[in-house]
Length: 376
Image (cartoon, rainbow, N blue to C red; front, side, top):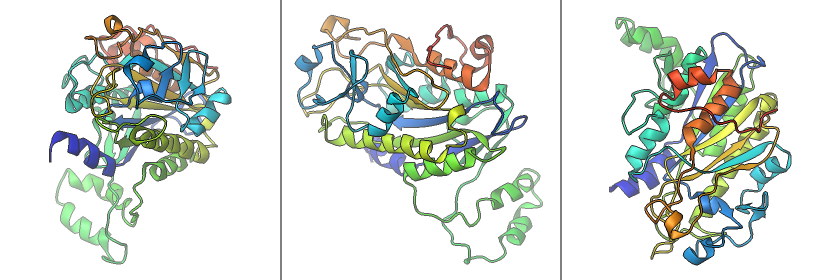
């Protein structure tokens, strides 16, 4: 299996979520908000998801990847029409978009790019912890991961438990607790995790669709004293060929993203007003359509934000332009906003962490001067 096939198949089937349980705050604590992260693996095409309307160059460099009937957002940008649920949040004043954003990574490698988007460092493999994990650590939040291994984005020196739902039905073994204690009780490390491991016993369910997992995350986060951080990953955005425009492969994946957002919103009503949903992707796609009616690995993309913490819908963009001389290396949408500054502002408002602390502990090496100006 080559790298491209790996990105297309394995990540799509390895859907999971993580949750952070607050040490000092409950789910109703107004000082600590909730963050739900959607990792979009493969490199989402921001120019298709949120197409520029005033920059007519896009019609010269794309044909089959053009989205004809966008939902107008602010006069300068149009939302892909398949994202109807996100559009509803936009109309309610609870959604925003940051465009021409990225992680200052230009190597065009999925593996390096995904390490950067999860680690939040200045270069691939620059850190062994994740930016969300570091934020949870600063806020005294521990994490609970229902995936193996714990995703890098949630790793920190804070307490992390990994619970992976078993595929064994409950009636296969009738005395799991006795069996597990017998095996692990003599091990100093494993004996501490007997009770937490048994929590996953009986969670037999073959439904690993990300929108279903988003529902489960929302239900957990809505509980009193529930998690403050949720996580779902979805793959498929590596659309090198037959990408499509209003319809096709990329539209199908955007529809899945829209369902994830809708599912979380529908089942998190108790905490929605104190929550924010954010998307993360490793890079964007080339501005110009390639010879196989697709796009290749690029630079900047777009970030979707939704939730009750947002009180003003807007597209935040320092638009770089799509003329050849304006593109990065004459091929990619140029990054004008550091994604780490975007997520830093989200963390600042959701977790009540100072910008100085974010600069020091969450995203070292960044300026953290960005104010999205979308908050209540």
